[in-house]
Amino acid sequence: MNPSIHHVAIAVRDLDAALAFYRDTLGLKMTERCEVPEEGVEIAFLPTGKGEVELLRPLNEESGVARFLKKRGEGLHHVCLAVEDIEAAMENLRAAGARLLSEEPRVNVHGTRYVFVHPTSTHGVLLELYEAVG
Image 1 (cartoon, helix red, strand yellow):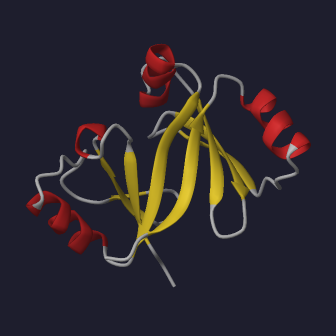
Image 2 (cartoon, helix red, strand yellow):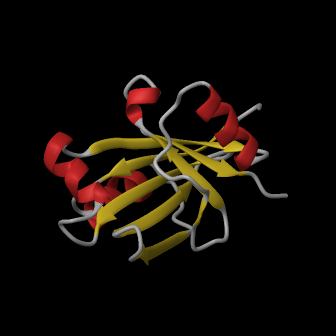
Image 3 (cartoon, helix red, strand yellow):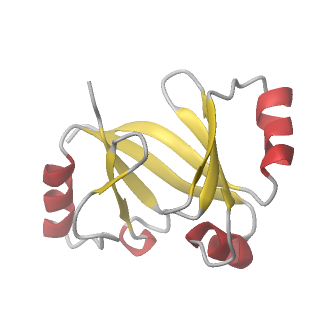
């Protein structure tokens, strides 16, 4: 396993205000903005070269991002690492005693398989693994 950083996700209350900073002030280009109802979020994607910043706004009060904002406020939500083989990575993590948030990889709207690793297993950071494609 030789993971690389795929993206850093930041939980925000107001996506337009966050875009005013990351896009308008820093000059990052937004490549996509979409709602993902199954995750309960609206996401803006801002590439940074080899990775990207994802801005996450909750769509409802029950979503994981909404709960995160209530508990911790705005800020770093998770770090995502790209791996070549998601099943092998999951097996390796399970063998090491890591707590995965799903038994099988999930598939996002772009067809990418992913899994989250609970912060209790990663020294306090919610970690997401994406299966690298191409």
